[in-house]
Image 1 (cartoon, rainbow, N blue to C red):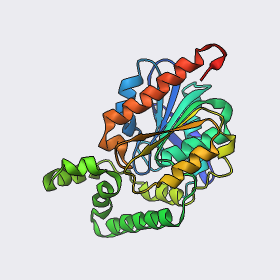
Image 2: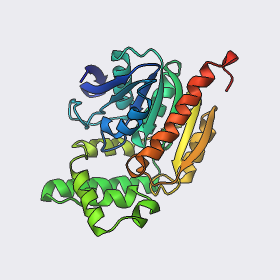
Image 3: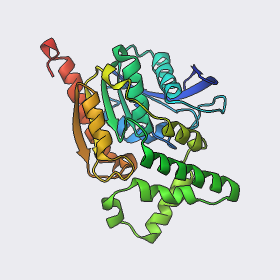
Image 4: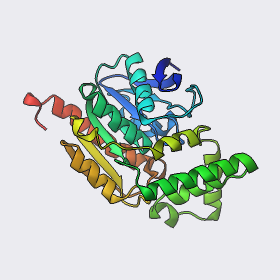
Amino acid sequence: MPTTTASLSHGEATVAYDRTGSGPGLVLVHGTGAAKEQWQPLTGVVADRFTVVAPDLSGSGATTDHGGPLTVADLADEVLAAADDAGLDTFHLAGHSLGAVVAAHLAGTRPGRVRSLALHAGWVRTDARMAAEFRHWLALLRADARHGTDLFIRMLPLMAYGPRYWERTDADAYEALVGALAGFVAPGTDRQTEADLAVDLRPLLGRITAPTLVLASAHDRLIDAGQQEALLAGIADSRYAEIDAGHGAPGEDPEGFAARLAAFLDERVAAERTPAGLR
């Protein structure tokens, strides 16, 4: 697994990432508490035509750092360091949840590097309701650390999955999911959640020049429609699409989620080959 170094606001990070496939660059940014493996379904679909780079953000996977506070800018620097180390001068960029925020930050601060942008379940600014939710996550994580409980993991499907999941599940299936999640929630989820609390992309949205897909989940109980509208209003070349899932669409409907993003990416590559860059 390749690694590279990124300079963060409180020290350095050794950023681990996967590099798969060949073709135009595609960089994928995972969400809070996840890791680069979140993107395996999409990577499997597009690695025959894209060079896919998927880093672990600080607090997740094999990336190591100073152990202190994290900012969205820090995480964007980690993503860019992985892209640089993989030899990607320009690249398509996609992110889920916190990863969408990080991707938007990178597209706004380094617009010349980003060929297209796909944001799933992203948001512009952490408002009072979202802040209350993130503080609840932190309380659960701290209680679990003190008492050896699994309160946060048990909350995740309630927050992240939509009606289609709950219509086809039962108590045993829910317990199986909780058991599976216990092995996947990143140890630095609390640090990433602290970064969630401080999100404010308003100064950067107008600097994003990449054609952008704002992909919402129809049953997202964390990110409301107003946040998606703010992304669309703030990013000049943006459009909206929706998936029939909850906030955690990459886990709830991995095939459908991957298909939506792959279609957008293929369209963008085709558009780049069109005379005069017609969109």
